[in-house]
Length: 139
Image 1 (cartoon, rainbow, N blue to C red):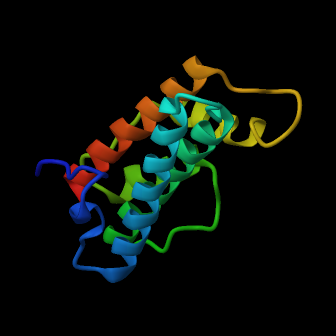
Image 2 (image 1 turned 90 degrees about the horizontal axis):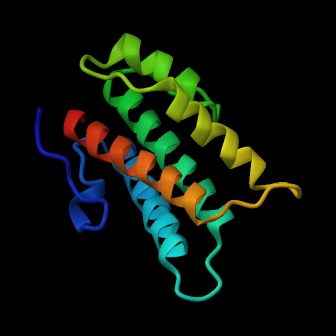
Image 3 (image 1 turned 60 degrees about the vertical axis):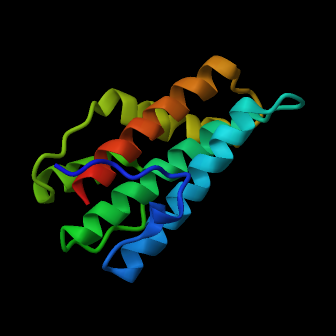
């Protein structure tokens, strides 16, 4: 397994396959946005941080599927993407409860009645960051 590439560097989106590189670039941008909102000293948008954490994980998983020769489906369910990755990417496994939490919060924060707090945002960002590190070490 190779060492993961930081999402904060120009190398974040480098990949031999340009489509994978595009997915990685978008995922890195989502991580930057999630972290920025999480750490904002004034008016942090924790809902946006949670949403972009899920988006980063989704885009990373789709990039990994492409490297495994699978055309990723146009879905947002991380548990479903995880099932495809487990079948097609040797060495991949992830806690489905964490993936489910990321998928669920990304929907909840878009509607009235739920507002993420700093703890939610930090938890979701931490999950997305660990997924980045794991998948970038595999692809």
